[in-house]
Image (cartoon, rainbow, N blue to C red):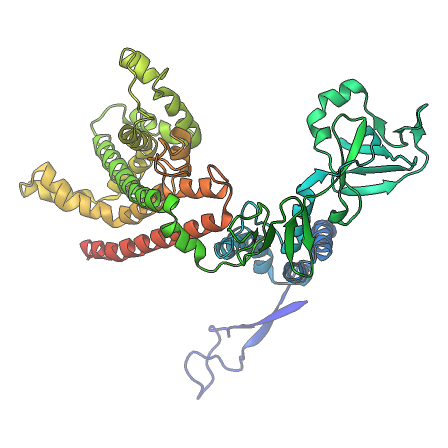
Length: 549
């Protein structure tokens, strides 16, 4: 495959009479052909092998999406696979071949995550609401089981295969069946039996002895074998690994009316329109389904009594923590940068290395170390420096906040030290010398000349540092876990929690169960706050540009 381009005329040839100056006589623009070097055999083979591996994985993913009937995701995934093959199989398009992997990972791990989190914020997705209504009905029927009165006893044996346990049943009529969790009873043949006619062995499976049954008692007791694919037919369970009984749902589902009826009390549970079955009194069944709830999660964040009060306190502390962290780390970093920037200071390279050592340790590890140092009972600070005092550095609300700020100062000042050192070394020395010749004091030189010039380059970094500390999860979670806990809420929210640790606790069920919808709504609120503050700050920093004008 070839490409063409125009080659400029040779300016060294004389111009023809009457022709414009600079254009040689008899010379025209001559096309020059550029030939693409074909791929080598090794390169072609490597490309085919790598693309084949990618396509093999893609085909497997597409098959799983097809079986799960995820048609929207399937269409997008198929389009992506076709585009990737087109990019790498066609000749040319070298920039696209380099950019394609990065763009793909950006779309999957950034864009998709952002949009999916935004979608979840408008649903009730969380514990008890993580699937469809049909799945919820089946789960209720499966979990709300009680033993059928006077049900016949099944002889049972416990088998294992591929690290999974199975129950081999012999019913009163002598029929032998095999089943496990989620695998309905299936009649089998060729099973070994003992002298009583009980099936106790099956080809391809290993029979557990009494000691093994005792050692795995919890897992064996948790085995619930569906009698059939219909959850209403009940299940078989064993209490000792040798006999089993039939259980049926204590809640009977009426498909026509769309209700559950408690077979003992007669109470009726109906779809309450909020992704759950509920009685007229408002009591709901624990298993529900995912639905769209609109702005309800955002409203809950500011109206739920157990969340509204603590949330306002958390927001105020989050701003205080972020602003104070930026101010303290910048002040200390700038002071040390000025101190160790003196030309007549001996050993300043060693001092600078020592200053950045806290920056070399992982923040989460430093948080754990400091939590041990500040422990009220056996911490090094209380026991060694304070002679056995029992000061609650991490248990008193005020002291815990001070401790968090001090530890974050220790972790954050090296970054500001490095930034300020680089900015100071880039300042022109002529301005400093001219100001001193005019009789300006060192403080006046710093305040009127150095600091404004420093802020021109450092202000964007201060804004990014604010955004980082606004979401500084590690130091809070590893040092205090968000504590000490508030007493006026049933949620696990404490005095040192910031918004990001609150989102983590809401999302992963610390206190009241996992609530991904509410957590996603809070994450969007965090994004709006940080984006607004950053936009305003960047707009205000434009005034600093006048310093250089």
